[in-house]
Image (cartoon, rainbow, N blue to C red):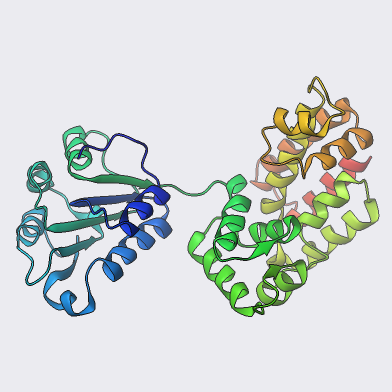
Length: 342
C-alpha cells in the first residue's frame, strides 16, 4: 500500500481507469486543474448513478473538522462496494490528528478524496504526510512552467486526435499562458470548431477562435528577430503598443531571453553546424527549432548576443520600475528592438 514511485497525474488516472482504487487521495498544490480533474473523475465514475445518493458525499473543510470527516469515512457503503467521500477546501482543516490516525487504518470500502488547493501540507507535519502515503496517494499539483506549455497543448490535442503546427502552438501558449483551466477551455472551443474531416489547428483557426492575430503575435516577433527583419519587428511592436490587450512586454521578454540564451549556448556546441548535435546540446525535444539557432548564429555574433542578453535584463528591471520612473512598456520594447538590430 505504501507510496513509493513518483506520483503523476497520468499515473493516477491510469490506475483509476483500471479501477485500482486507493482508500485515500490527498490532492494538493497551486495548480487547481489537476486536482479538479482527478476529483471529478472519481465523483463521476467510481459509483453507478443509482449508488450515489447514499454513497457519495461532498464536505467542505471550512464547515467540518477532522473528527467529522473521520466519522463520515468510517461509514459502510449501502448496497455498493464503495462509498466516495470528497472533502473540498481541505486546506482549511486546522487540527489533523484524527485524520492522521485514520490514515494509519483506513476503511477499504471508503475512497476519501482530500482537495487541498493553493498550497500544500505544512512541511513540519512529517507524520501526517507519511500516514497519507502509507494509506494511498499524496499528489502535488504544480503550476506548469512556461516552457512546458507547448508540449501540454500538443498532447492535449493529440489525445483528441487533433494535430497542431508549432506556430499555432506558440500563438496559443503566448496568448493564454499557464492558466490550465482557461487554456483547456479555449482548446475545447477550438476542437468544437474543427470539421470531422480536417482535425488540424492552424494559425487561421487560432485567430478565428481565440482572437490572436496570425500576423501580429509573439511567434512572429521572435521570427522577425531571428531573421533580422527590422521592418516586420517594428510593425509588430507598434501593433502591441497600440493594442495592449493583445500582448505586452511581460510576455515577450521571457520568450526573447530564452531564444538568445539558447543562441549563446549554441556557440559552445562542439558541432554547431549539425542540427541534431545542437538539438541534443540544447536538450530540445526535436530538431525543428534548431534552424532558428543556425540562422541566429549567421545574423548575430557571440559578442552581440551577450550584449543583447544584458540589455534584456536591463529592460526587464526597468519594466518592473527599477531606475525607471515613467517610461511606458511600449517605449521599453521599442528600445530593446532598436538595440537588438543596431
